[in-house]
Amino acid sequence: MEYTVQYYDLVLVAIVATMGAGAVVGVLTPLALPTAVTAAGVVAALVIAHGLFVNGPVDEPGDLTDEVDALN
View 1 (cartoon, rainbow, N blue to C red):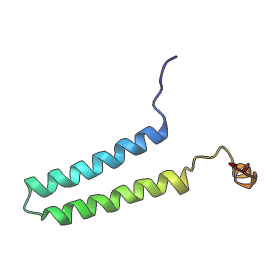
View 2 (cartoon, rainbow, N blue to C red):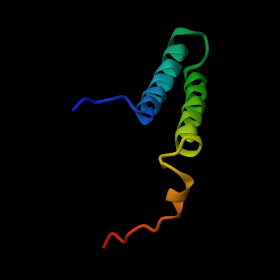
View 3 (tube, one colour):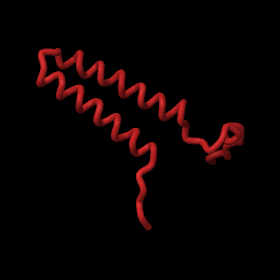
């Protein structure tokens, strides 16, 4: 069975990459580290919001109306 990269794998990579890039920018440039990491955090939050709300983990909007079975 071969593994293929999915959209949500790319979302996770983008979160780590933006936060890492923010830290690198904060360390290697005159921009303050907290400012750079905060800006990167805002970008990461936008990536998360896109993954949740724009390209959500459902096949079609009708999936949202299905009842969930009780866990007990």
